[in-house]
Amino acid sequence: MPKLAVNVDHIATIRQARLAKEPDPVHAAFLAEMAGASGIIVHLREDRRHIQDRDVGLLKQTVKRALHLEMAATQEMQQIALEIKPYMICLVPEKRQELTTEGGLDVASRIEELKEYLKPIKDSGIKTSLFIDAEEKQIEAAQKVGSEYIEIHTGHYADAEDEVQRRTELKKILKGIKVAQDFMLKVNLGHGLDYENIWAFSSIPGINEYSIGHSIVARASLIGMERAVREMLEIIRTFAD
Image 1 (cartoon, rainbow, N blue to C red):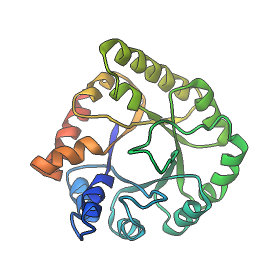
Image 2 (tube, rainbow, N blue to C red):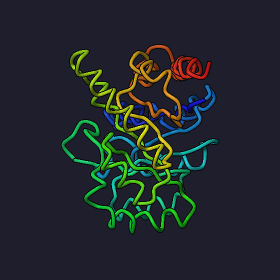
Image 3 (cartoon, rainbow, N blue to C red):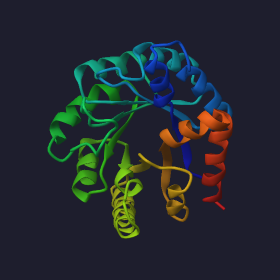
């Protein structure tokens, strides 16, 4: 059965809006794990707009299952990863002016650079993933870089303005999953997935993990984190039936 990794960035977004002490992403991660999440994801951005260094350190100490650290391919983030030693890092593109990650990492133009960048991380025993669009050249490049996992960007599918565009984007993702499997890459999916659009993947084999944050945090603000996570897990579990 595919796993669910819960991104708690936007718990920190609420906290940072008032520069307050709560809500605490560490507490949210605890509740998500109690509800059955297989992993906790945080994105430590260069501008520290939500998750802070202290959060990552505390999560490393408290997360019982798998801590995933999303990060840009910078020397600062490489050093933090090597110090914290999360279960997995996922390299993502990052622009200061964006509200959220807008697309996949361009791996194809940076194969040697990223291969060298990931080497000390892999040597330290940390699993690696690359957040990429469902394009064959990017998937092939991920395999050449030597990453064990990829996370296929589902944002264009989630944000589609009509059914025709939605089907087109879904077809690209499904093709990308097959290409990745042919390259022996483990496939995660993430960005913009929610309680409705995730059903499109119900019959697709070989997906390792769903990375979901905003929709779970949004629902959690109304019904609580544990219930929000359990409801998403109930959906994912039906995929294996």
